[in-house]
Length: 194
Image (cartoon, rainbow, N blue to C red; front, side, top):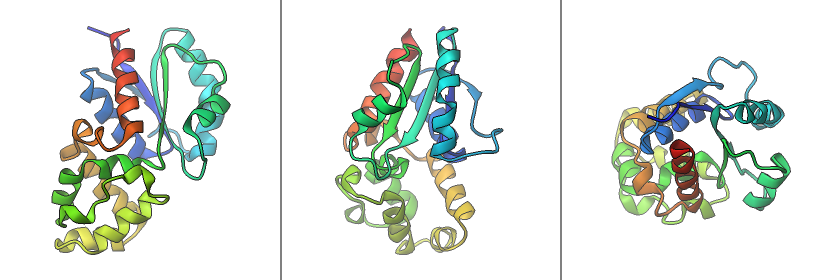
């Protein structure tokens, strides 16, 4: 059995997403470097990357998830964040945000939201604002509790997203429409086998 894979990201939803990805490649989630950490966001995560690299060089396996957001080129961002790759550190960039990965599982999210699959984009990574797109789609949901969650606070919407990731999201289905998710799963599977 391979050693557990620790994980980090910009926020609590990333922790849930990371655990789901780790399980999807048949590995065991290790230490959560997100939930207990009070300072969140991409800038805080970026500052922590050198420490994660040190941990990986000393034997830890780590998955770090970060959104591309307004950056233009994922490889350039990876190079800027980590000039020298570290074998046991899997830093993956979601194009544009992790919500694009969620929408890439079109049938899963359409069913969970209670909307027609035709309302879910066929190329979610091409959308410049997937988080806002998901919110707009949810506003048209047939399910009243879904509409209420997304019309409420960010915490309510995040709670819905967290539940979706844990119970209905399929990264295997999503990887066909989200190249950055596919690359993340390939790299993570290699890390799990190492």
